Length: 419
Image (cartoon, rainbow, N blue to C red; front, side):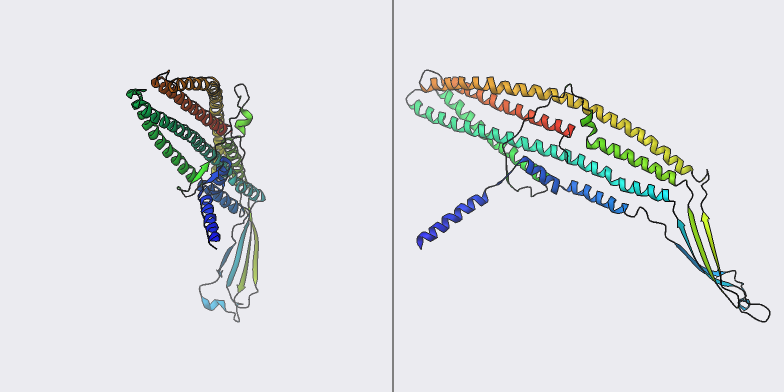
């Protein structure tokens, strides 16, 4: 019985340990949650649904006009009644008028209303692309910060070993106090760096939780995996990429909407028809009467001035949008070419650090620390070799951060990830 209780207690401890472990979110997980939960995207989605709902009423007619009252009725009520001389005078009329819209106007209105949400759809995609780029930047910064923390903690253990060794060696006059104090100061500096880096890591998680619309303090682990992509766009034709961007598509959709507005204005210059039916309830002995009339609006030059002015305005707006599209394409092309050159340069620098500089400094440090341990070298030399190696590792991580940040910016400009 006692053993069973012990097993249960141990099981509960194990379960609580695993249950308290923070969830690991990959970059794809983060981007998926942003797409689902971000309130800015939900706002766009609501606007799109609103416009689509509004488009369902595009083919509605004007409400019928009902009228009622006395028609050709004398003021003298005595004349309303029939007598030996007259059959009576006056009528009580009930009438209805219905305007029948031009079919071309209904079609133009329907096409316009159905197209309105297309611009918001592209704006939503554009915003999602911006949010994804921001999330990738924070995520990659989190990866780099975690790597720096690991290096700092490893170095902390190494310095701790060196300090303890010096304390022992100093008792036998085998080490000098300046080296000891230098190691102690570097140890304290590393402790301060770790505190700063851990704060930076927490800030990145806050920012990612904000983008994911989650509790800001909700903890999670960042996956250390990342991919450095190959971009070689210096000689490439970027027009296909740029024309596929959401902001460019939004401009094209806006131009289409302006063209549809022109069609609506054209339809407004065409005649419209109507039907008017009146029924008269005659007073006295008069027969019941009715009237049935057709109506048509005749557009004249003074009544279509506004339509023509609006059509000209939309044409000029489309010219402005063409220039805006050309401006964005020109700027994007220049930015992508420049960032690609920087990206290739950073990759070369990072590779040199990984292949040559860091291995050489590592061998230099190993030689210096071995000489110190064998009492054939000075600790100052070993500490300087360690400092050079540490700075080189941190510098390589800074280059890696720049590579990943530039990669994110290129992906944002190309908008290669279709949503």
